[in-house]
Amino acid sequence: MTDNGVPHFHNDPGVPVVRIGAHEFMCEGARAPHDHPHVYLDLGDANEIVCPYCSTLFRFDPSLKPGASQPPECAVVEPASA
Image 1 (cartoon, helix red, strand yellow):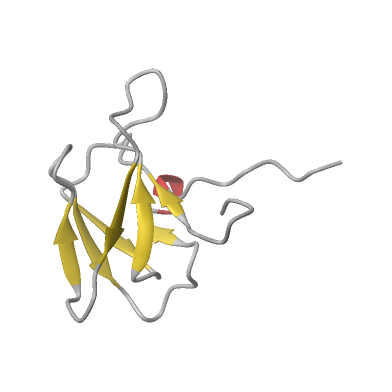
Image 2 (spheres, helix red, strand yellow):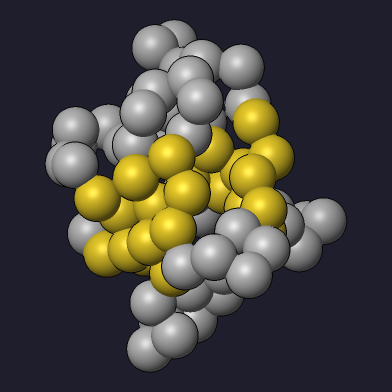
């Protein structure tokens, strides 16, 4: 999760669905240098949304923490500050 509190996710594994624990988040597509423009997405009242750039389906999962995903490697985790 980034310092601004908005979780970031990517789909490097190329899975059809990424389950996430947040309603508002940023999609990076794949990891740099193969990423797309970073786009902020908001589920609103819905439980799923498709990224308009990479077509990844993100599905809200209330059992996950806000910055967590399933598969877990799709969550972008910033290194701890020293």
